[in-house]
Length: 238
Ligand SMILES: *[C@@H]1O[C@H](CO)[C@@H](O)[C@H](O)[C@H]1NC(C)=O
Ligand SMILES: *[C@@H]1O[C@H](CO)[C@@H](O)[C@H](O)[C@H]1NC(C)=O
Image (cartoon, rainbow, N blue to C red; front, top):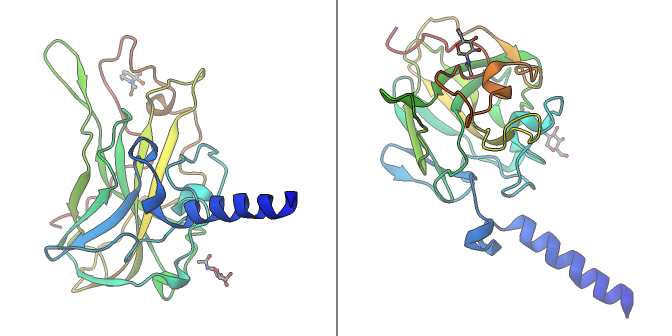
């Protein structure tokens, strides 16, 4: 009997991990689970790799989970065709509410995007969104439910992983651990340019944990901010 009950508990836990819809509102946060292109907001995890992490952050800077989240595997995920220059959006289950920067990275897949695990020195950054500071020096973070940007026009055509990353630094280091909320879409870029994306970094390895933007205390003498990671590639409108 005991084992039967354990099994039910285990199956229930498994079910709540495999469906985003079983979370209560209070549990939901920062899951960038829906992709928009061409005016269509696609269903949860269509073109975005599902994961087994739900709303938990990734905190281990040395883990491959920092690429596309825990248990993410694109083999069963469709890949969407997007022209260079096109707008796209990631939409979270609820608006982001942990203070911190947001970045978008990409990696060129050697073959099909669904078969690429993101290993190697292949990642480049196309967008950083840090805080703005008003005249009194008070920071405002751009905490939204949907983030929209454009595929760089200079980006060569081909299959890519498109990765969104929110770095929550509301519990400042070292008492708290910065938290990464990550999802990866799979895209085929058409009509691309002849740019050379870079600088290229590895994930993990793209942030070493010593960056001011990682260790900063945003509640104490906070007047400027640099988003961690490589410089943004200037392939937009190139
Ligand atoms: C996804 O999982 C399949 C089956 O376990 C495995 O063969 C494949 O290498 C994985 N793909 C990635 C990109 O990790
Ligand atoms: C703010 O600017 C100073 C001076 O350039 C720099 O040393 C510091 O690391 C910056 N802080 C953050 C959080 O980026």
